[in-house]
Amino acid sequence: MQTEQQQTKMKVLIVFAHPDKQSLNHSLLEVTTNYLKEKNHEVKVTDLYAQNFKAGVDGDDFLNHEQGKRLFLMRDGGSAYNEGKLSPDIMEEQAKLDWADLVIFQFPMWWYSMPALMKGWIDRVLTQNFSYTGEKMFETAPLAGKKAFIISTVGVPKESYSKGKLGSIGEVFFPIQHGTFELIGFKVLEPIIGYSADSRYSNCFEITSKAIKERIDNIDTIEPMKAQSSYN
Image (cartoon, one colour):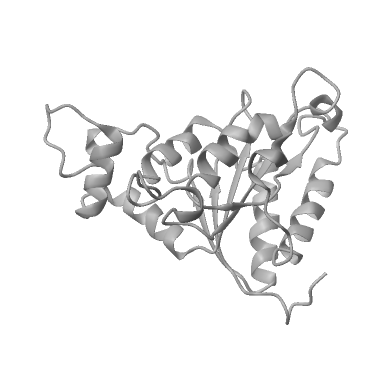
C-alpha cells in the first residue's frame, strides 16, 4: 500500500445514479467521496437523479440543429460540439470529464445493465468529436489516458455470477467497459461489485466499503484490464 505522501493526487469525477437517498448506493457514495477527500483528492459528483438530468437525447441537445430537419445524432452531435452549440447541461458534464483524471461510474445493476438515466448521460455527453471520431478511438481517442471503473451493486451472491446461469460479471459489463469506456480511451480498472445487496443479512456495505478504500489507496499501481481477454 502506498503512503499518502507517495500517492498521486487525483481529480475524480463520480457519475452516480440511484433515486433513493436512503439506499445502500448512496451510503457507498458517501464512503467514496469522504475517503477520496480524506486522501486529499479533488472530487466532483454528478448525481443524475438529484440534478433531474434529462435522459433522452434529441434535437434540443444541439442548439445549431434546425427544427424539422432530419436528425443525425452522431454527426449533428459532433457538429454542435465543434461549434460550441451543445445544450448547457451537456457542456457542463463534458467540462467535468475534461477536468477529471479518474471517472467512477456508480449504479445498481438493473436488468444486466445500468439505470436508464446513466445510459442517457452516456448517450448525450459522449458526443462525436468530444470523446471519439471516426479516426480516433481507443488509445487515440480524445479522452485517452484517463482511468475509469465501475462501482455497482447486485442483489444476488457472487456465486450466482460464477456458478449459475447469469454469466460472469465480465460478460455482463463487457458492452459498458469495452464498448464504451475503452472505446473512448479510458484505462478501465476491474469493477467493484457489492454482492447480496438486497439481503437484510448481508454485510455488503462493510465488504464493499473496504474494497473501495483499498482501490483508492492503491489507485496508482493497479493495472488496467486488458481489453477483451480480461472479460472472460
